Image (tube, rainbow, N blue to C red; front, side):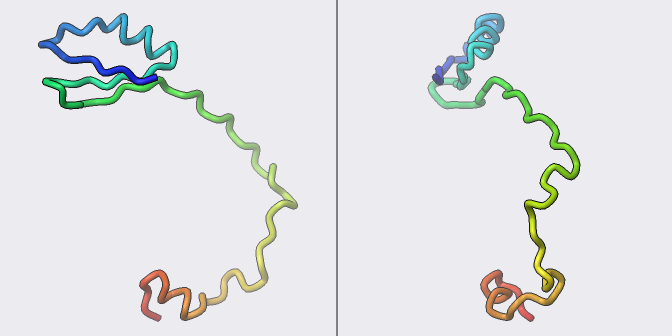
Length: 80
């Protein structure tokens, strides 16, 4: 849920905003009805992947380091 809070010369209850963030709410700070900033709760970062955990799941073609086809290069706006 997103709420909008009007900023009135620093009269914002920070404790209340933090409690709302902890509950997962997103807060938009506004001045005279114009949004100025967005506050959102931090999400837990995904756990680090173990090196080699995708072994055997990825296949690299024998032509991996060959030049790309002209048509593909043109599609990316690259002149060969």
